[in-house]
Amino acid sequence: MKTVTVYLVRHGQTWFNVFGKMQGWSDSPLTDKGIADAHRAAAMLSHITFTHAYCSDTMRARNTAETILAKNFNTNVQLTVTKYFREQFYGSFEGLDSLATWYAVGGKHGVHSFKEIISKFGVDASKDFMHDADPFGAAEDALTYWNRLQKGFKQLRADNRDGDNVLLVSHGTTIRSIVDKFGKEDGFSALESPLNGGVTKIALTDTGIKVLSYNQTSV
Image 1 (cartoon, helix red, strand yellow):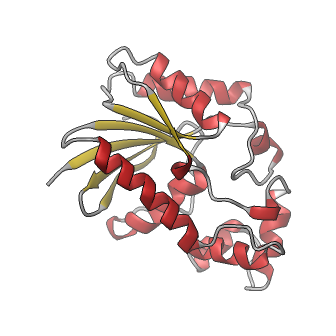
Image 2 (image 1 turned 90 degrees about the vertical axis):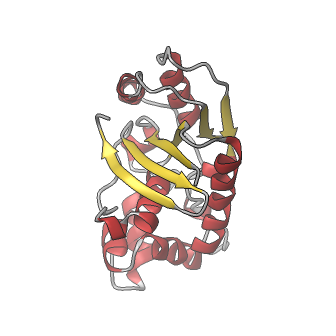
């Protein structure tokens, strides 16, 4: 059975992260700390030889991935930019205050923060709650979200061979979603947000996904 090891990195800190804004498909530049986050991840992964490298099609993910690859002298690959590993789409809530948004989204269900929602109902429920609360109906629900991500995993399986190491730079809620869906049985909890520049390691097989580590600052 083919097994591909994926080093899943959250992009460096952005200005929307600092301002507490909903940042899904919307984008904002890396801060100075965000650039440092990318360099820290690069140093952490500098000894890994990657056979392929991927990132979402956001500036923040691409800049982080390019920094990691520039400092990896074992790797000479082209960066593949893909929409499949974007962050969750927050619809008309994009760019709004995060605390106020999750307070409104969770209120109908008796919870008032993102952490309360995922603690009581799970990460996927937060997607469905947001979709239902979006007056435009544009925010991704869980089914739409996972249909998109599974296309990304299909691409990774097709592109890589047994034993390959892959770099994938993506986003906080996307990494949380993967850990929540595939890591709970092995004791991983997605209640705490992955750090900007933190590394999560997963094993991708022909038939499934196994979380090996979550939110590491050394590998």
